[in-house]
Image 1 (cartoon, rainbow, N blue to C red):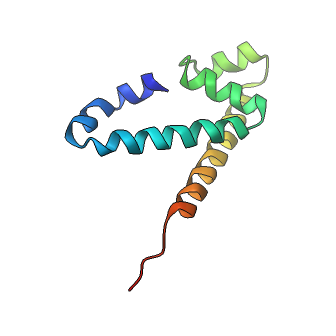
Image 2 (image 1 turned 90 degrees about the vertical axis):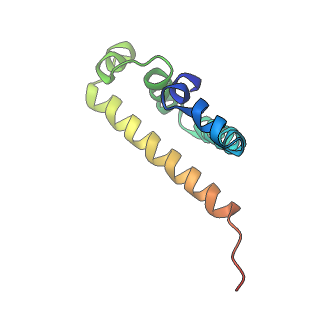
Length: 98
């Protein structure tokens, strides 16, 4: 995960706005928590893709599953993660008073 953040210029954002580091830390914690809630097979796909930077074909070969299965698991994992993070964000949003 840290490699991915480095590739996307997180360090530069921290220099410009130190509060970004806090936001990133909280988001990363929520992401890891959501990842742990995924089915084991989905977690493995995400880990191999993000942490080991394997292609989906390499992942499918390593896990001995069809390419389409690897792709579907990743898509479903990302959909679930997005839903979980969006839900957490909605829960943390306080209504504005007018």
